[in-house]
Length: 253
Ligand SMILES: Nc1ncnc2c1ncn2[C@@H]1O[C@H](COP(=O)(O)OP(=O)(O)OP(=O)(O)O)[C@@H](O)[C@H]1O
Image (cartoon, rainbow, N blue to C red; front, side, top):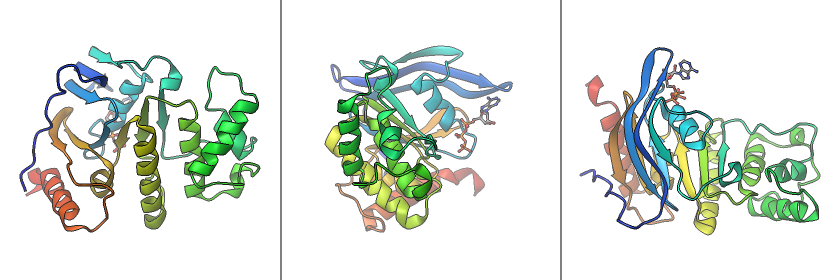
């Protein structure tokens, strides 16, 4: 299968963020090496690559949790912390707060009154946790906790949602369920999603575009044009997955 290079952002298209010559050195090593990347608003971008290739470092730079040693990151119209949210592999819920409060807490800097409570309840419905707002986090399964984390990340209506292996700790079926949920919500809300994942099939299911990092550089940048909704095991998805995986292991042959 031919892997197409993603076209440069069309002139005038609004970019969610752009990286120019971004370099990050950690522990005496160049983890990211002069990266250039333009991501249009609303795109679902997946970042894949072998362990230690710098995926999380890139996400941290993108969200402002870390800063580059060289180069520039332009986050377009995303300004404050509520415009860019990040979700991790662990839900990181407050154990002493009920589920609805855990969602409302995502409204940084805003009054957390009745309106916040109402919006938290609506989001719990949207992530499939209707009626669970009064529960403690300890009463939820791993998948349910990630649903709460997703609702918390979305309550401030972010422009960019960064996802650092958010489904990595879930069992296979829950993971697929969560992929479908994530896709539905992204489709409905239109934010820009940046997903770091080890799972190439997950990237193929969800992304408009897949970027593979290798030794601090972009080794592959492909446009995923498969129609949505996508299904695991569908022949076109399997072919694309295989083509990406073969690139992954090229050097091992
Ligand atoms: N704070 C740090 N100090 C020193 N080295 C670091 C630090 N953070 C990350 N690194 C190194 O930078 C490299 C990239 O790490 P990063 O976590 O971005 O990789 P990754 O692709 O997300 O890996 P994984 O898939 O295993 O999570 C690794 O070699 C890691 O050891």
